[in-house]
Image (spheres, each protein chain N blue to C red):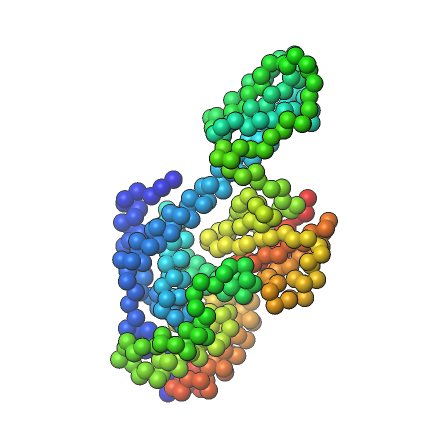
Length: 212
Length: 177
């Protein structure tokens, strides 16, 4: 008769991983994780720049709906606003984000419209982040931008969780645990949507949701 | 934002110093060599991605072990929910296959029985046993590592040992002497 620790040691004592392959593979995959993190951070920064830009226009007396927004190449955002205010306000945010906000002089017509609002050109600053209907507020966790109504979060020890918001019409399937619709945490319905979370700390993350 | 060659050297030394133990832990958790390699590499990749922070931590080995356990449990959850397509062979099929070649001097029948028996437990129960009896973690530490209450660790540990006992011929009645 043996105790469990003895049996475990006997079972694995001769097992030796390829440490060289383990090291090189880990470094390669670790770099990829970093790149994803930094890409997410860059996207979030771009979103902040856009928010600051619109806020600045609003504070300057313009109305967001009276703004023609045409993102330029790179991480710059040109706002062509023939605003009724007397002075154009060139803001250069490059020290912070590398982004640039340019408000050109008044247009002749003085008419403002969102008709010319164009989506971000592919390859400029990445896909337009979706607006999340809620925030994840669990301390130590950071969530990336949303795309296709889902996003990923990473915890203080690099654990991951996958967060998805779904239409209320699917809630019964998820809440009742259909074979192909299971999650570690399922929220109630809120404003026509509900949330599922899979991964580490799903319960805690779910409890931390703050709906907007 | 990258690592310096010095960082990489230190990380490589860390892997060489801890890799065997971490891999064996992963093997007990997954019951499969390929899954264990993948789990170990994923763990070290996460460690490398935060290497400067980990390196400064008081207990980098404990940090890596916690990542390993949580990655194992997260991976199982994701597979179960269907959000992440399973790329590894189903564990049950793997266990029934040719995974258990004799690679040790230990009694092959005992080794087959132990890993196969562990694989029949739920991932969380397996993680509890591995933490308690392989990593020699206390009930309090195991509870902290796995995000469970101490009562849950005791209950799961007792239940898992009861399930293992009829499956592992050499296992003493107490599980641990």
